[in-house]
Image 1: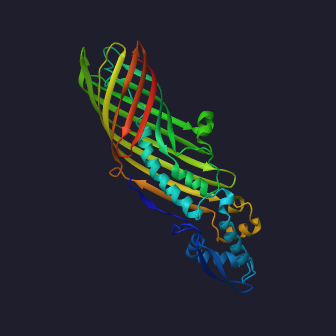
Image 2 (image 1 turned 180 degrees about the horizontal axis):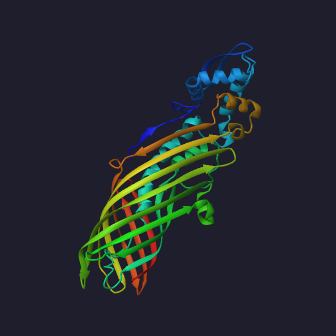
Image 3 (image 1 turned 90 degrees about the vertical axis):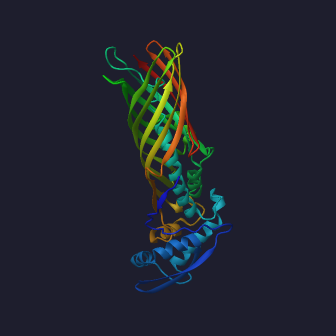
Length: 387
């Protein structure tokens, strides 16, 4: 999925990946703390980029706190401690040489993954086996129930961020399920052969033990509302199938986070999906096999932020010196960015199908779908009361 990435870092403006052993740069800082102070410090490339991009603010902080320059000054000592931490990254469980760049680029990548998975999780909701449930008059046709669904969510880039921040992701898999637990309602139309459906979903995986164990140390919290209208081209009957066309929308708002006591990475997302669809179904005794196609138009906005205390992440280093580095801005603790797609960028065709079990007033529906653009499979199981 194409993303328009806008990096809005308050303390970081450019990222250059390094490979192998980290490279160093020499940075010159000048400030006045009683007398003129100068420090020529050697720091890793990505830290040097941060300092150079924010030099004026850093020098003001050095002056305000009375930092001392020179080879043995407090600034030089803090810089030496940063270098020492970078030479020992593996001892902190960090297997990259540029943790700040890796953490931020990982969240940018996860913006893409969220943008791909959200529309597929939305369309698992409010799927009915019957292509059209009938009119409200003269005999009422309506139904309501619950639905559980899941779509694949690629969290490999989120794991990269967690690792770069020293967060232990343990046995967290690269591919997880994006879950939905939904209440839905559908009612038949009048005069013309149509029906209208509504759906609502709210879930916080940190409060559901089974999800919390699977997703830990990450969590997902979101809600979705949606609705659709279907019009019957063929009303069915006997061996004639029902055929309908329709359209609708879904709106989802929520967040994803991964955290521990020393670092926290958060993403807040909003997604609006419009869709057009067609469906065919045929009832055979108690079974209702069905198949259909959708075209989704999705607009997704994701904002992310990182809050890291490096003095707690690099526990083997001098805490006071790292805290000074953070206080002055040599080693910034907060980063942010965003990503988004527009409706015309997020066009994706989707096939779906399944089978319903219709026993008197109880409907059990199993559905599966596949997104051909993002290559994401998804599915849902619904239990409803219907007339």
